[in-house]
Image (cartoon, rainbow, N blue to C red; front, side, top):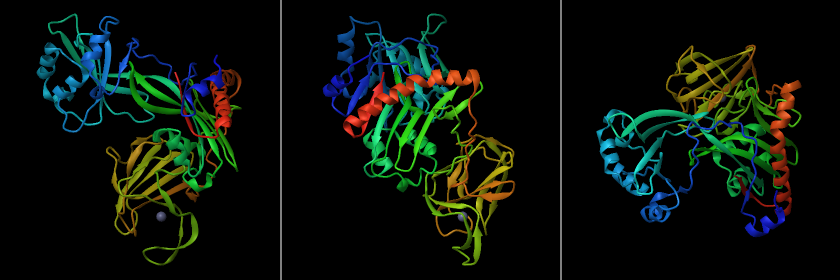
Length: 441
Ligand SMILES: [Zn+2]
């Protein structure tokens, strides 16, 4: 396939491009399969007009993309994209403001245009932001039309995106996050890595000399980069423990498995928000406000007011209440099989949260606060089984169910290219003992 040593020599340790395809859980191709001939990035920094002229002879369309900035207006954006199309500009102005996102621009959103070499618009997309685990993306599109009275049509669309696997290797010198940063692993991917590591939020347990390899998705739609997506594989080599997790999905199964096909999927998030553990599960504790001795049946997670709180597993909201002399704003979720969880002292609930509503594992349910009887901003979290509080930090929350038969064969087939890729990363890692970002395209 390639000469590894040669490539490394040529490219150094920082970046390496591997030419190979790896299994991806979202192999869906978007409705428009046209691949971009060239992608023009950061339209503001280059003279697009000149580039477009230069390429005019070589291709029938070009892609340009930009991100909406503060105090942007549609004219500035069209100029950055290299759009020279007065009919298009007239069309945009003719769309009712209520249904026209170009009339109320939100900074940070991505816009991608497909243009003729002369700068005429073939299609333009304005994307809505997506969550790391979203399965599809919604965008507003204006495209040239051959039918109808108008030269253009506009619509809101939802598409599945295509994914590219990206691999990265990190060597811990001080902290897990530090290693991730120097290996250029995005925060959204690290959140999933930590979840797989289990007691990962206790970053101190990750020691100098530990290392890990990841493969994750980078999502694209018609050549536009939509950022990182799902973690596809993790190998963690720690002093105390080794963790491996492969994402597998078919019509009936979905989740993380070890190389033997045993589920390593945890039914519950260990911690429902990114926070620092301040008080743990304790049978006798002096209450910080009343000073009375009283057991503490949950865990306290210190985090700034406004930190998002996620449902620790799928379930139904059974209680939503305000208690001034206790839990403040709190809610309880019933997860079935005798499990329930409680989230207390919230500053506010996420929209749509009320009793009877179904929530998904990892869904935003509210925000950390300091309502009720508290000394500082934190989340009080309880996990109960058959009415009895259990310690979410130490309880074995894995399902452990193995894949068997034909599904196991399907699984083996699906992860074999990923395993090869990880083995390759391992070699690269040994040779350099340093952090590296590797994209596989
Ligand atoms: Zn508490």
